[in-house]
Image 1 (cartoon, rainbow, N blue to C red):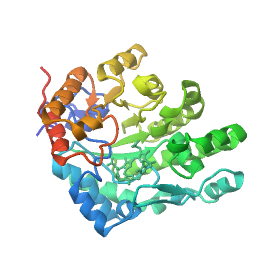
Image 2: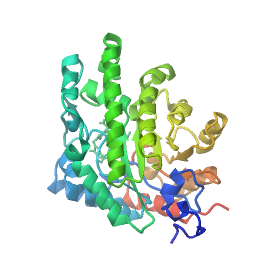
Image 3: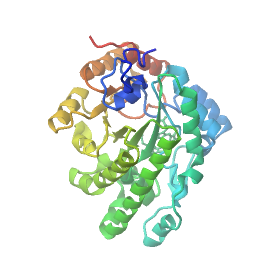
Length: 372
Ligand code: CP3
């Protein structure tokens, strides 16, 4: 049994699963591994389920189905992390905003752009225990199923800037350069800030609900904040990241938090990495536009020696690489991280056309590796 194998009887943390310990900042005897978006399109068993449950909302909101999908990558590859099969948009209906995802993956939301629209969000209190009960049920079943194994159950939430882009755009904002959000920031900055503040409060409450239901680690996604200049980031993303993370830490201090942002123009090459660390998280999940060694150096130099790293294999290598290339690139990252807390992952979500054999090779390469 890898977990606890080297534990001393007096230490309570070493009896915990590998990924949980790494997320707390321990240098573990083996590097834990999972893949962002690991459950889903690249797996045949998932595509088969899609035939019976054609919409994403069914697959993520029927507890039996969401539970089964969450377990698929654990069963197939033995990933150390098992993430809830859900979406960052899942709590929106409980906040007064309905959404749909088409079979092609297009997202549609009733946009919130005026005070009248915003009143729909404030009309009723946010009660995840009742309106998001399916999420709690899946997490508690995952926790029961995985009890006594070396796996860690991850919950996740979207952070206010990223959730806010969906609310204001009414869709994925990347294609329009987040035009509607830029417009609202100019025309009614107070409304934009009220919205982000309300989302921050509720998202933190939703994360606490996930922890109380069984999540052992929370990953917070601010995928689209990498589109902001550093100055914009400080005004529109950072304060709300801090609000969510500090509320989780205040209410559930023992639960480690990982932050992730997708690579984009401004974030490329790790330009915003210290800013992510300053949110108060335990771990920063880096993309593949910066080397792990460079990210480590940057965080250390900025006084974040205690913050761990997650990442960062380029998902394109996992999709198109030869087995030799996948092993070499994976081991290279593991060597760069040696001696410091590290959770292995991809730099962004796994691509839909990734062969399952490559995903398996990646996980197995990490689990076989021992730093000299
Ligand atoms: O990719 C990221 O940057 C992570 C953050 C993020 C998630 N959802 C987390 C997630 C973002 C930005 C979203 C929004 C969203 N929702 C997208 C992204 C692109 C867009 O159009 O805005 C998509 C495709 C959805 C809908 C969705 N979410 C589908 C169809 C699926 C199923 C699997 C897949 O990848 O196609 C998801 C699952 C999902 N989204 C998970 C997470 C953490 C599931 C858990 C996992 O396996 O990691």
